[in-house]
Image (cartoon, rainbow over all chains, first blue to last red; front, top):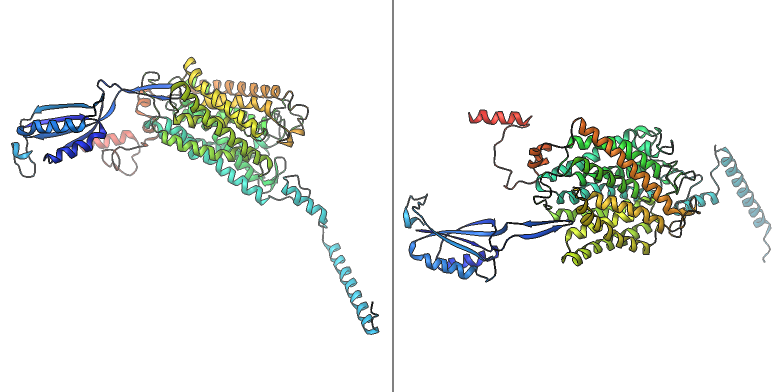
Length: 112
Length: 505
């Protein structure tokens, strides 16, 4: 099993979700997050005071999948989330040791 | 002509006799009443006096039209503070301090109402010395629904008193903007109680009291023949200059100049600005104390100046920084309202346009350039808008006041208006600044030396909503923050903490 975490632009969330549904992904967890990367922050001016807001809003999508579909899922996310401009985000893939469905007690790839 | 028969002639004579007897009877009845009513001409003259807002001779009564407008204006001016000014300021502070602004505005309303009833109204509007009124109207004694002809022959004096109370409430509430987010609530309330007594009541009496030394329009013996229609000196200069001194003595907010102090909701600020503009019609047009031609002119000039300033400020931002901001629109509108205030009932609509342009320009420079240059923490720009704007408005009124707009300028100021009025304005402005600065310095230092002006740094960082009021303006989670119920009225935080630890044990 692998956990796929994608940090994407908030307005791309619907595209990513629809694309993942199309390829048969049945669940995901979504976080509203803030952060900065190469884009940096944005400047706001209030009367005489200027502030750089370091952290810009992003959405983090988290999915745990069987090893066999990892490539397909990652490709789907990248295609759906890409705009080609700075700040499109990143995808991370990490191994997952165990998964348990609380209701039934199923374990491993059956549970994801 | 037909000759009448003898029978007809007799009947005519009889009816004439009856008519004569009736008139005689009526005359006797008239002679029996204790005081003869004024003749028709006098009664018509009094009615005309009512329509033209003149002085009546015999008809001493509140005018329904006058009272209707003044009660409306009173409510409008209250609306400026609650919730207009609260929303305008509240949106500009950080989330953790919004309720402290509400409490400060509401606190002004409560405290000043009490002071006004006890002796404030009397010290301002009862005759006394050129500097301070007497105690004739203390506890609103004798302030009834009958008019007080010293100020308004057709307005109930109790309505007039409530109207002026709303000015006394908003003036200290304006100071809140400079000291926001970092003054102890107890210190703020103590400051305002003393400040009203030594600055506002004397100043308002000098400018508007019947024997006040700066009441150039109505007091022939005024030492300084200055004019102030709706409170350029009394309201905006006094609060603005006091705010500057108080924020300097208080010091900067913890983290000022290092962290982000962005407004938490410009939406609230925008709503508050709209309420201020609407309420200001009561403030300026209401200051005619009648719905007459002077009020109509004040209504017009207020609109024109505010509209201009509300566009000039963001236009300057657009030119200098590339974007017109909503805070710029709001600041410009308030700037325009402030600067037109002293002249609203004295200047022409064309002058109002000029005043509006300057009101967008000068406070803009004060808030962006001057504040940055001197590096003081006037948190929400009370001085930049009200101090600078009020000062400029008072001076501009000296140059632009026009007797064609307001014939009252011909009574005691015929030789001054259009000539040396601006010098008289300068004297009044100087006295206002000296009083405000001196009194604020003494009061603030006295509080600082005794029970302190500021909360602890920890309390300031946590936010005054929690530390001064034990509340939160916003809860992120539905139904309040995570926690547990600890009783109906937890008397103190100490007990809450011990109750919680007992539960855990």
